[in-house]
Image 1 (cartoon, rainbow, N blue to C red):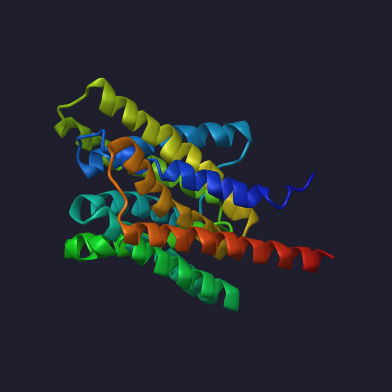
Image 2 (spheres, rainbow, N blue to C red):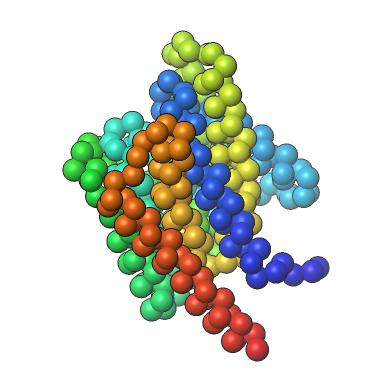
Length: 284
């Protein structure tokens, strides 16, 4: 079987980040509760993942590690959207992007893998950038929302680990997590009243693209690159998300946000250049 080019994994992760980042502008079009939105989008996403499983003839599996991944899938999508209803978007993203720290801990606990210095340095700079990016909103959050966002970061770290843990099957976890979340929370839609074209189309886009297709790219990316590298690339999402909101909803950046964006983008670029050169040297 022909091996993928070295840029394929990072490209898949970048594509996932771009699709993930559309969540902000799409959710603004849906005046439903967090649970109704999340249930419906996950039910639609499970159809995308299910079709992908059939297309590549991937057999659905189940064990405790796959259940762990499904719980992570349910946890990250549900808690993130709930946190967005209870605290600021800036707080939610900052706390969810504690994920690289949890990845390092999980890698050490489950895989006995110690982080190298450049991983730690990149993570530190990404966090500095994200903190700058949302510094002006850090004090406006609700305590419960902040806690939910932090826990969602732990679940998010679990998703990055799915292709690294023994006996795991990322696609089975993603499908079962999305299907379970959809079946549990979609019934909350009965409490909603606005079923006009805009929210319906936004929910369809959230399910098919922002979650469904995005997690296919996410799975391909995490399969080909290390979890910490994947999480660093995915750090583009908290920059792209408010950028899209600014373009479509005319919400402007503050000077602090611009500083944060520069730090995050520069860190990701430098980190991946260093990794690419290191991989080339090892292959030589």
